Amino acid sequence: MSKKREMSTAIIWYTNDLRVKDHSGLAEATKLHDRVIAYYCFDQADYAQTAWGFRKTGDFRAQFIAEALVELAHALAELGIELCYHQGDTAQGLAELVAHNKAVRVYTQHHWMPEEKARIANCQKACSVEWVFHHNSLLIEPDQLGFELEDLPWIFTEFRKKVERNLRIKSTQQPRKISDIIPEIHPIPDLRSWGIKSVTQPAHSAFPFKGGCIAARARLHQYTFETQKVAWYKHTRNGMLGVDYSTKFSPYIALGCISPKTIYRTIKEFEAQHIKNEDTYWVIFELLWREFFAYTAMKYGSLFFNATGIAQHPSPEVPQSIKNRTGNPWISPKPIDTKGSWGQWINGQTRVDFVNAHMIELAETGWMSNRGRQNVASYLVHELGIDWRWGAAYFESLLIDYDPCSNYGNWMYVAGVGNDPRARVFNMERQAQQYDPKGLHQKTWLQTSLF
Ligand SMILES: Cc1cc2nc3c(=O)[nH]c(=O)nc-3n(C[C@H](O)[C@H](O)[C@H](O)COP(=O)(O)OP(=O)(O)OC[C@H]3O[C@@H](n4cnc5c(N)ncnc54)[C@H](O)[C@@H]3O)c2cc1C
Image (cartoon, rainbow, N blue to C red; front, side, top):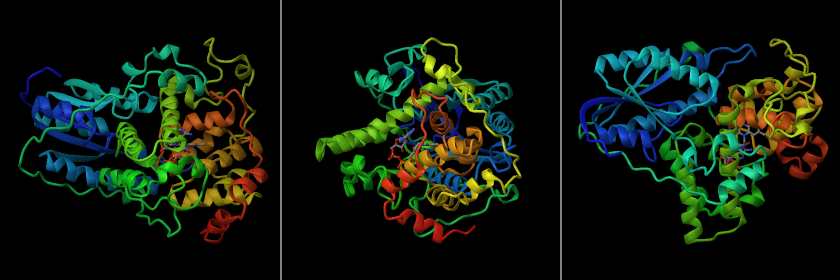
């Protein structure tokens, strides 16, 4: 970043990087330009009804995004930056903003999944400016990996060992204050005409938190320095009830309210000041799972959305045992078939209460524990024989923490067409006995069911 500041306007196009701290694009834009305008689009395609029969973004995530944007607008205003919203088509709104302000550059972040890539391509076509891309969602940026993407290991453990050998986390400069004049804070567009409703978390929700960068930092502080729950994480992470069995960082990471780098550094600070044990390490271990799916998606792209997943990729590192698995002859139910096994799964009306409780929790909160996700996914795919992509699309609609790489990566993994050398078939009865021995999770959600 040795360039000099210019008398010019830059646009920073926000997607799922809704923060100001630890944001390399914003830091660079504020250093190099005397005027910076922030842009966020509620793209209609993200809220459309899908072929599966439900909206691409459900109410809980929509609300979390809106909350995150309110905090972002205030944080940007303190730097003298206005956050402008557009509702409709991202490329059209961006082109108008660029033209109106005679912007010379657009800063945004790298995306590598097909839909996001196509949107970037549309925007590039619509705006003839200089484009600057940063990595704002990864813990380890590609140039710090220590190997090329084509050498990405197939198995998580190999990936983890490789990156842990020389783990380097890039530092990020903080943004400069552009102006002392506080810009206008715009209201969030009203999405009711797109069918979005405002929602409230039930009292017993495991995720009662609000969206936003301040809320994200508060949760990080709470889980580390305040309660020190992080020092027990590995012992509690398979829990299902309450706010503290796991970190609950995922929605904040998925929307970029906080960067995984900030989380990593905070855990390291906690370890230096308090206690360093297997539990504190395990949060970083899990963050590496997220990196693994992100890089696997970067490598295999659209295969993440194929019924046979990445298992059929011709590259030599795909184990033969996986290539032999051509996937089940999965059933694709009709979207309106809410009475059959698909509808029973969605509505929490299968013959397994352990599954039902989790599905009801998801519908009523936009949240489900990792243990729950693995079980309901295994049940849908291996017990009901339904195409895993239907389950993944339903999760995409409902989860507050939806992230294409982690969601489709985990679903493929459970379905046996991802990077798992074994098939993930769970025995529901045994899982319920082990993880919900007193049936408390089932009681909590089955008794309060709205269905
Ligand atoms: C079928 C299925 C679908 C999933 N879909 C998503 C999704 O859309 N978005 C998402 O963020 N996670 C997804 N996960 C992974 C995991 O369930 C959630 O990240 C986790 O439950 C979030 O809770 P937490 O933040 O308290 O996690 P913690 O247990 O506290 O873990 C800390 C962080 O590590 C990361 N992490 C943990 N487990 C995983 C994992 N298996 N894969 C990738 N990252 C992980 C997350 O960023 C998480 O916030 C999915 C898992 C399954 C089995």
